[in-house]
Structure formats: C-alpha cells, structure tokens
Length: 383
Image 1 (spheres, rainbow, N blue to C red):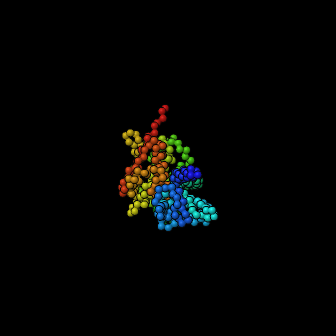
Image 2 (cartoon, rainbow, N blue to C red; image 1 turned 120 degrees about the vertical axis):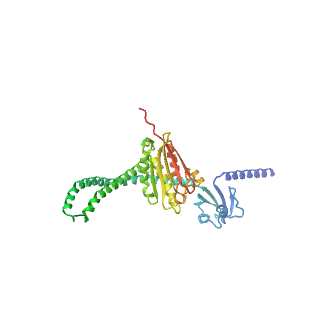
Image 3 (cartoon, rainbow, N blue to C red; image 1 turned 90 degrees about the vertical axis):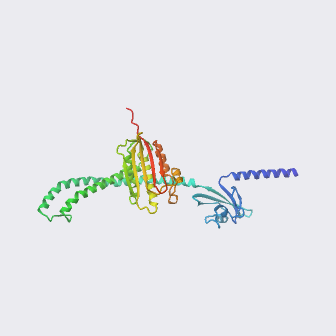
C-alpha cells in the first residue's frame, strides 16, 4: 500500500513538474488571479508577494480602467482588451475558471506584446490608403489637365492676338488721349496686359507640371530600375510635390550641378527618397521652438571618381547620437505620438541601396542634419 502511495505521489509530482515546465515555457505573460485581484500563479519572475495584480504588473494603486475581470465574472465568457504602456501595446485576454457551483473564483490572464503586429498592421493600412490615393490622384489629375489644356491653348491665341491688336490700339490712343480699356487708362493697360497674360501662361504651365508630377507619383510602380534618370529634374519635381507642406516655414536653396550624367534607376523611388527626407527635415524645423523660418539646402555634384552625390542639409534641431544611429531602423520614430510609422527613412535606405548607392547622415543636437547620398553613374551600353 505504501509503495502504491509513493508511486502515485511520484507521478503527481512528475505531472506537476511537467505542467510547471509547460507553464514557464510560455513566452507570453500568463497569470491567474482571484476575484480580488490577488495573483495566484505567474510564469514570470515578478515580485507579486502581497501585491494586487495591478500593482505588480502595471504599477497602479487601483484596478486598471480597462480591466475585464469584473466582466468575465459576470458573463462567464472570455474577454479581450489592449493597453499601451511605455510605448508598447499589450493585448490581454481574460479566461474565467468556474468552480463546482458554476461561479467564477479565479481568472487566467494572458498578456502579449503586440507592438510589432500593430505596426505592421498600420503599415498595411497605410499601403492600402496609398493605393486608393493613387487612383484618386490619377483621376483628379486627369480632370484638372483637361480644362488646363484649353486654358494654355487659348492663352497662346490671346497673346498672339494682343500682339496684332496693340499697334492698332496704340494708334487710337495717340488720337484719343483719354482712351480707356476695362476702365483702366490705356497707358497702364498697355504696360500690364502682356505681363498679365505671361503670368497666366506661367501659372497654367505650373499646373501642367504639378499634374504631370502627380501622375508619375500615382502610377503603378513595377519597381524596375531601367529608367534614364536626371537627378536634378527629380529634385525639382519632388519640391513641387511638397511645396504646399513647406512653403510657409522653409526656404529651399538649390545648388545643382547642371552637368550631371544620367543615372540608371527608378524615378518614383528616388522621388520618394527626396520627399521623405525633405518632409522629415521640414517637420523637425517646424517643431523647433523659436525657429520661425527654416532652411534646407539641396546640392548635387559629381566627384572625381564619377560618383553622383546628393546632399540635403537643414538647420533644424539635429539628432542625438542614439537617434542618429537608429534613424534608418524599421519602425523607429521620434513621432510616435503624432502617428509616425517609423518606415519613411527605412524605405529611403532600401531604395538607395537598390540603386547601388549609399546613404548616411551627419547630425549634432542644435546644429541641424545633413543626409548624404551617393549614386553610381549609369554605365553606357556597349554598341
């Protein structure tokens, strides 16, 4: 009999050890608490002696506002919630443990860190939005382009007509000094009318360029690096895309080498590189207290080794050493509270590498930042 009892005891202890090993092997935080929030079991090395679960795990003096223990006790069904603690997002699932009478005595809670999953989810949502935006932008660009084509064509006719009509009006004015056009003295009208038409032509041409940039930005990108790319033209088109976001707070200086050779690459990807860096710099400058006007200097040049360089320098707040070392890391961002995804500069880094180039950043707190990009020159095809 004693031997049988020992065997049962040994089997019980072995099963208990296996169960504890299984319990401890779970990477998520798992614990059981009674209806008064007292932890009973936990699979992590946490100091919960004499503490309520909200004290041990959340550092609070009272139950969490989103705690579902009471709901689980009432419904007898599992429940799930999420909570953000120290920039991490945790998903907590509560499971009721029923006694013989059907009441809930204890609750098991499983807590998972779902920060990465949430960031990837946001990335997918953003990608879906961009796809939708691409279709919308393409449609809007088409609707704008149609009337603008008529405007540009008609302005050319109007300008040519004025050049023929003005000598006749000049003759009439010489005979009638009080002659007016559109309630304006003819002298003033004569000085300004061609300038006004010229300004309208420039405005219509600018609309055409913006529409063209939007169409390029919205078109389906197959990711091929097979375009003859003029880096200076990409710089100019990128600035037109971000003009509205930066025009009130940023002064942009261009120092572009007009003798740059072509690059073999993808216009959209290099455009996105520029847009990401410029907008990041503009946002940093805008948030810097006391700085009313920021400055971004964009420079291109060819070095003695026939490597093409693009430099984007700002006079913003700069970066700490820690931020600078992580600035290209996926999901790293200093703008988490403002819906920053931390993907922009990571994507930028990948696009530059795809083109066989290199990107680095020089920055010091209070002294601004400079992004340095090197791209290889296109190798001419053999004939």
